[in-house]
Length: 152
Image 1 (tube, rainbow, N blue to C red):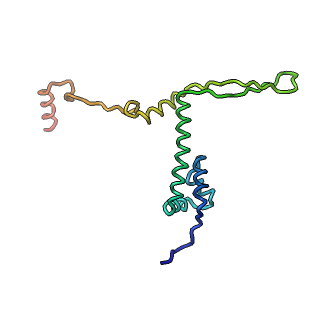
Image 2 (cartoon, rainbow, N blue to C red; image 1 turned 90 degrees about the vertical axis):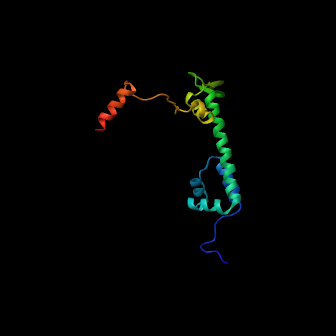
Image 3 (cartoon, one colour; image 1 turned 120 degrees about the vertical axis):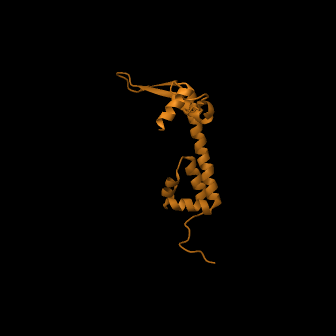
């Protein structure tokens, strides 16, 4: 049985290239641009070539883990080496002053982290259980009279 349509432009080396691109954060649309194909072709390659599909999963997992670590660092705060550059008056050369900068924890990043990691304790939605009956400050007998009068 012969295949219909145009032969696939897929090549085995695309899997490794796609994995590296995904590790750098590439989306399926960006992969399509890189390989100069329509995004539907990327979807088809994922379906038809298991090694390509797995390469994308592995590459995207690496990128997602890097973002997760960065979000965590932003949530708890961190330190990093930086350099200030000064140009004193009448100086021939700039002065480089290395220092250790402290980046404060970010409240929004912490909340986002906790809502996703501990959703039961940190979600915005609260489940409220009500016991008893709902009335308008009337006794059950008076409420029953109001209901009967309204239904006449």
